Image 1 (cartoon, rainbow, N blue to C red):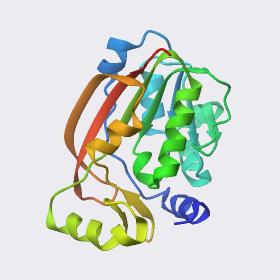
Image 2: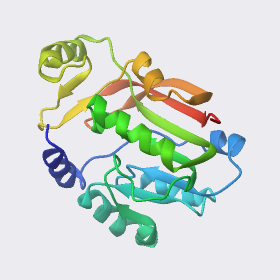
Image 3: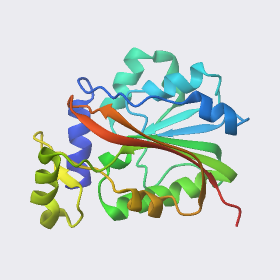
Length: 216
């Protein structure tokens, strides 16, 4: 799916989609003492709101969807100064700008290997030495419905777990092995598997990962 098509989908979907992944502020408090956080792919600002309420007053949110940012501006107008429209593959921030980067359900919405690798490269670039990455996203499922659509789409997209939703947008469920590849260069601090309700109301296996950037 072309980048412009994906962006158009999220602009249209902004007003009606809901996300359920919960922020573990206890994880952040245990491993982070500073307040400069990037909420990368902040959508309509649900996690951004939680971070600011938890006292992380240096938090900034980015999203490529003008529709998502507009919804955030309506529901949380006080967050507007913190919002930046940006492509997560090329973030408009200087090197070592943040102490932590949060990416909730961002990987699933940019399903290509190269896009995900570019995202993680940008996360490493904008993190200060010893900075944290906090990822919450979807894993491969083993039920019949999901296995059938993974198999139907593997030839088209070249990766098992990438598939097209009925609305037309392409998304991805991830193997643990691929997540380990994406998070190379980080030391695992916290990791949890759980079940979450997706934006379309279905159950999916999910994970949360907190890692610290290794010193070079």
